[in-house]
Amino acid sequence: MSLVELHAIHKSFGELEVLKGIDLKIEEGQVIALIGKSGSGKSTLLRTINGLETINDGTIMVAGKKVGDRDTDVLTLRLNVGMVFQQFNLFPHYTALENVMLSPQVVKKQSKAEAKEVAEEMLAKVGLADKMMHYPDQLSGGQQQRVAIARALAMKPRVLLCDEVTSALDPELVNEVLAVVRQLAEEGMTLVMVTHEMRFAREVCDKLVFMDQGRIHESGAPEEVFANPKTSELASFVGGLA
Ligand code: ADP
Ligand code: MG
Image (cartoon, rainbow, N blue to C red; front, side):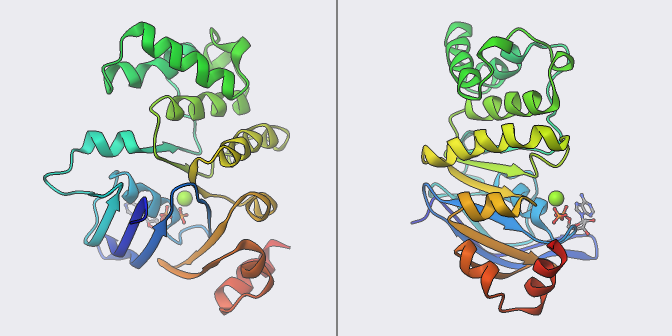
């Protein structure tokens, strides 16, 4: 069984059907880039995986547990699935260290000492060992996003979902965040990232998944998918990138 399995996922907001039958398997250690036009359903898809959105039909399994099942603890799901957003959403009145320490204490009931040890480790991992006592407004956007990544990692998720984590950043800050994601990928972290960084997707991801209007139109090795678009939707998307 794959780490994450989506089968025939349908999701509507009122009359608007946003996911129209999505099948996707995510293997342990796989790095997936999810691409497609704005409004194609990428964020909604990520949000269904960690239970932030309920689905109308289909099944989602994460680490062998069905999402949305009465018997599946939402807490366990949230522990397994980490998520990082375009906006960093740090608590402004907490330091970087406190931001990272919070969830492990509240959700995992770790002691303060334990949470601090993990938080220091994760902040060092994202290159912020010297910024732990800084407040978000004392950090650049790239540094704030790295704190957000450290915060997600502190929960020791089985899979990390990244939704356009560099889209809100000034161009000169994009690379420091991508470098952290690349390092995670190299360490074997299972990753699904919605991204517009096509070069990064090509270099780092094992698999490219192209969505359009609520459907996965194509998926496969990035090189092949980019080189030989089989659908007019992807051809036009790739054409639009140049
Ligand atoms: P993407 O991330 O690919 O840009 P989204 O998943 O954010 O796409 O959105 C897909 C579609 O669903 C869009 O038409 C968007 O307006 C709509 N949508 C997303 N979230 C909601 C919501 N909470 N309520 C109503 N419509 C939504
Ligand atoms: Mg989105």
